[in-house]
Length: 81
Image 1: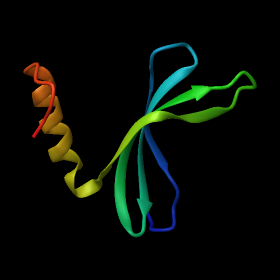
Image 2: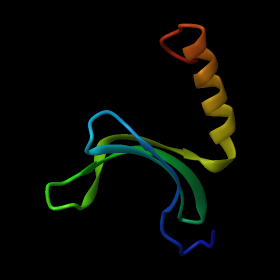
Image 3: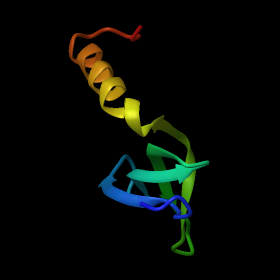
């Protein structure tokens, strides 16, 4: 993905209500690559909008952060250090 590009959607997953989906994205901001996970919702007129719930992780730490979070979730821990 080039520096000037906008957000690239990597995956879309149905989430929660019929008018919600979870989007996994890759984007560049100030020459730094990010992965994002955010809930999007469908308005009554058929347009998708980003919700308040979501995170962005710097690309070079994404695997480390997500792996650690999944380990803690699997073990029933509430907070990763």
